[in-house]
Length: 177
Image (tube, rainbow, N blue to C red):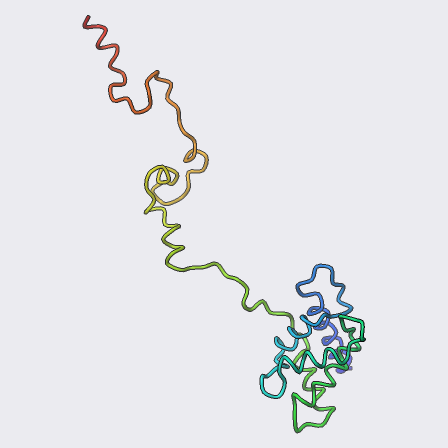
């Protein structure tokens, strides 16, 4: 009973890695890039006894000549090829069981995905207290944007040009005469 659930977990891991990064993937077969990612994420590649090149060679060996993908059965054959190399000193069955344990229940990780930069330059550029001129008018004292009110040019219909200093003095001049 325990072996059937282990194989089920292995199949689930295979499917998750098979569809990783490919919106059209069905999960029935896995390409070479995802095979390499599975081996790297599940620590099948240890850098000493199993390298990325070994993984690529095994992939090429188990897949059909004209195919670019491997099925679940070919995937299991590939693990059988890698197991004795990864776990030297163990019997073939023990090595295969150990390699299955590395993979069971694992999912693709998103290590190395681009994160939001938090460097001095970005902080300086987004600090609204240092804005000047017309850009300063778009934010209130707390640094929150004013929205459309900060972008709209408000028009005063007084009859005077925008920066005219003596606005509103015409009436006083005409009374004196």
